Length: 464
Image (cartoon, rainbow, N blue to C red; front, top):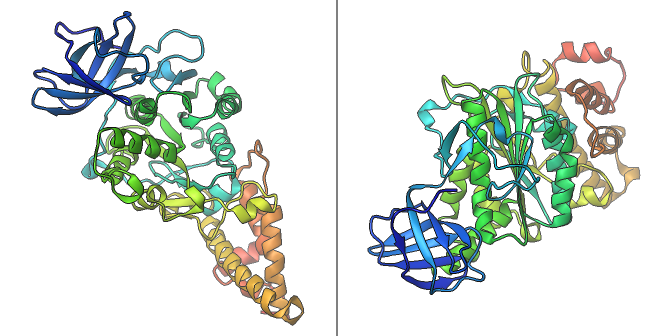
């Protein structure tokens, strides 16, 4: 953190939640980094949220607990918050402010970068066209993650979204190319934080992981800084270091709640469900920092995880996230109740860039057709299940009964997977074929005949 500047201000007018209002300032700008010295000599740090003539509102990263208006001095650095960037972050565990939480020395880097960052210029964006393989069959086959994509996971309380996020962070690869993961945990319980550290220990030991953890009892302001630190670290690893970087951020709902709390402390007029009116642009300022840049090596791929309060997908956080991102992976309470992990709902999930990253030369030639046919078959299976509930299973046709068998086969032979089971794409696609061949050949009209001939010979007399 920065040293104190030459000019220190003592005119602290008000301490309001995580905010300090300073009077009599001059030449102070928005987003400027500040150092706050208490009467005891303790130093805290903050960022300028607002400047109005000679008043500055500073958000304190360590919160204002224990502070007193008298005896407090505030100095402004003249620049936004900057952190060291480089390979020094790999293998380290830090708190949400970037300070070591693993007992090691401070993270060092060959250069510094502003934490605020900026979205990638659309004119310089390169179209994502290569996959990031996660080792999770439901993701790799049906909602393929593409380098440079932002693909959120929509979940609800009680569902294993943290387990899935850790599994993806531990297993993800880019086909042997230089790869790294930056994991940002926000508002985690201490038990969840320990689970994350344990689950990612092997990747951290291999110096392929930077881990930033903000726990639920950490200052709320720190929660707003954590994803920005993660993205700043990732951008340098990718666009300067040439790595393909996956940034996993969980839980974005905790981040939005922190944003709402700070907004209320500032006295701002609330919008939907008391969130600030700029929630959309704030989320976009994070999500749009991922991608690929023309003429630059590497890529930044973002996998934000968010819980939907009461499972409401129209809640402002998932609703606005859906507008900004390129698809979603939706976890289902019904599938989870059946004891299946990961409890992905394939019919509610979508990767809008999947066609760019799947197919010949990228995954496997049959991948797009198999995925499309499997989704279509599952949609028909769901219709048949609802019909069976109305008229009874005995009234269904033989083909309808095969669709019910397909739904069971999908859940048991394809979707179900261990939390530490890393499946290759070849195995995942072979399992998808195994599920599809539960149906008669005549029901597989979305798969080219030559692919069908490769996996099964034509059969006469089958029901269609």
